Image 1 (cartoon, one colour):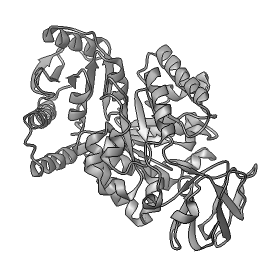
Image 2 (spheres, rainbow, N blue to C red):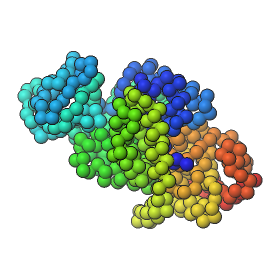
Image 3 (cartoon, helix red, strand yellow):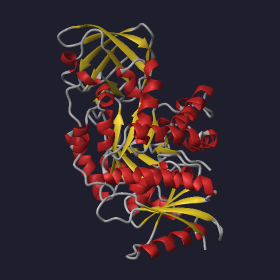
Image 4 (cartoon, rainbow, N blue to C red):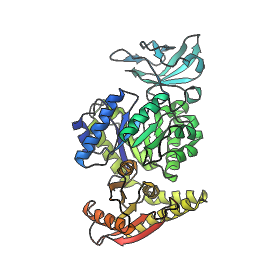
Length: 476
């Protein structure tokens, strides 16, 4: 059973209802809508199409609205693109008219003032890299360090400490309000530098509001990592932009560190950027890409993300299917026992003093251990907000995790959580009825048999958010 979730970006190649249906049938757990591209109306149409198809299939598919952030964007390149050859000279100027293989116009008026000789710039996900070698009053003189084909209207990656634009932007807040009004499950915030940036989005706590995903793509974000994780609902490792602020040799180690801290703190973490990049044009990934995806699973990623592969690729369904096959095989080889032991050791070193946190840490670790020792067929998590579920799955138990919540948005938000199958349960006033419903659903909805042993875990206290109740039961 595949445990690592798949996020697929919806774009021109995958936005029809038939395409969405096939993506869901082949492994898409979460749909990402990139708000940097297209009009708000066009993106809301994608949103409603995902909702419609998911309802028809009876699937709880989460939707991420990815806010543009303080992006510097280039003026459009000619149709067919422009080739940037290694070693070629190029000028950067302010403007929004057109870009060529010799001059790139960008929409950031302070670009020349902000950038210094010796800085690196990059296009898109970092495929094309430039080194700034000189500057005049109105232009930057640069050399192509790593060439490629520049197409469309790509983002221009600027070293984060040089970008004097705050996040969230005014446009972000307008787009966020529009999507929240529609009931979006998650919002991804770009170019986060501090916990203050996350709080500035001003949304209600999940699940009343969307789960806020902080994108870690700057040096400042890495420096403030723990406080950003604690203030967020989830995190995305945006490797393309991180590659501008850090040497490429550092990226694998940063990825492992960020993922480890997210899971330890009970936050889902998405590994993103160029996972199966060659499948934008080719029917199969490279061997290196397959290994990259598997290693992201071994690192502990809750989810892996497809971007251009599904948004504009030649065969989005094949990309999702391929990702599902690679992650499922990697999940089979994941060392659950070693992961749980390492996490428990880490938590002992960072012992919580808060009663609720300490109780949750102890009970969720115990639930996973008990489930393993008695050979339980599932861990049943009863949770209104999803907090209990995320507390359990950070231990990456080998036992199946089933989640039950009366809040549909909470259930869709759990589509991002590793190893979790979630359904909407009835609102009950008596905790015994909640447990009875879950046991019945485990049999009728998830195929467990009478007599199967299960571990049931929940939070019964109204005074704290603690997960404080653990029971061993049998399916009736």
